Image (cartoon, rainbow, N blue to C red; front, side, top):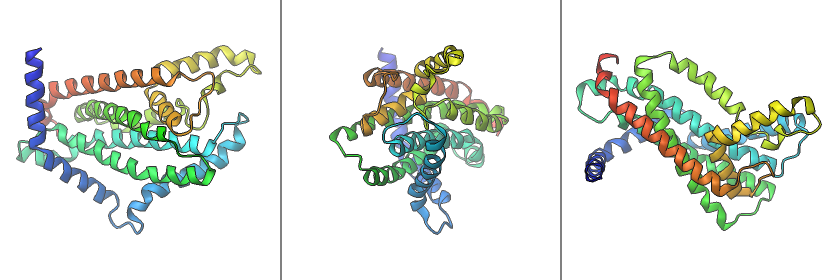
Length: 281
């Protein structure tokens, strides 16, 4: 136990030493994203709003099942999943893109991955402005419980850091992951209740498909981390859940376990092979 505490203390001291570098890297990523953009940071609000409008028009006519407060329901899932996709996609090349700096300076390699996730988090926080606009436009009341969205947001941030470290380390050796990940996130998006509810898998009118649908619904409930974070977020915003949803307290502790599990796995993998990066970048 003492050894673990000493390691944690050493890591914290080392991290604070490079805090200024982390801030500079985050600022650089944000400025590069909106460089030469006329609207600049406004796009962080406009992008989720425009995406929501298109998806509301399409999916409200395609799906017969009615979802209460569908625009807010949709934008909650969309902005959280977009944050995860952006953070992990940027993290994949975080080490490769900074190869020249790593060859010249002795800095912690994980700092580049952490900066990508953190800059994506800044964009996500800005996109909450779109959520507020939609809540006002649709008449969804603001409650004190809205502040509890910090719980799933922090869980998702930790999860993305862990997954980002894993992908960053793997991409150094296997560059094909950059192409594969796009397909993975696309499939992941459709396996996450963003524009549909979990109750869609339990349709009594289709008995020939009910067994397969039930199995898929159970898989999403138990093993999809994004479901855990998005459903928590929705509950704290609109208290929207049907009989098929997992209770929010259970989602909170399950989401925390998955997040820290991903962080431990990603950090251990990254640490075990980081000294070999210089041979492949």
